Length: 154
Image 1 (cartoon, rainbow, N blue to C red):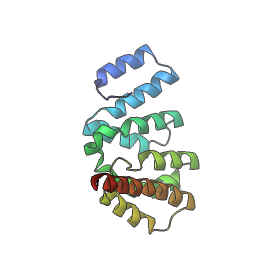
Image 2: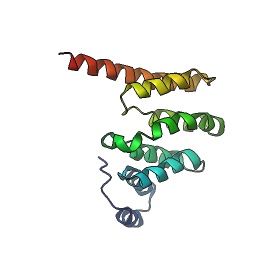
Image 3: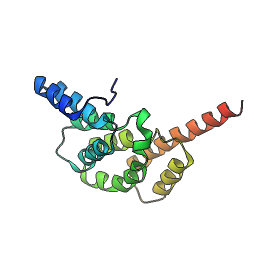
Image 4: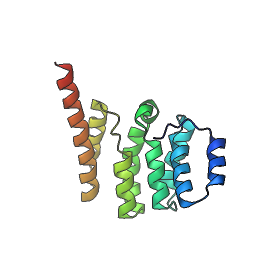
């Protein structure tokens, strides 16, 4: 489990002690999981802008970025996500584009705003794979909202 509690210096020290592929992946998760706006900004830039990141590091960074107990830090990235997707799909490989699309979908922001932004995005001209993946994310939000409504009506 990633808690995001290690300071940057501690993560760097651990990486120096274990500068292997596994150590680099774990460091990427730990850096991105830190519960600060700066950590999220750096992780976002790595995910969206650094096209040279190996897939394993990219996926580790995504995993650290999206923490269910840090939704307040992720709210601003909901609209950034939808704005970034067209460029991601234009510049990245299919595999990388899919990883980013699925991994960064604002699934922990279970509210009507996520549905509204998703619906607005889906009205545009999109690659069929992108449309399907975002639509699947939307379906998850819709199910969660229905389940929440059913729970509160009891």
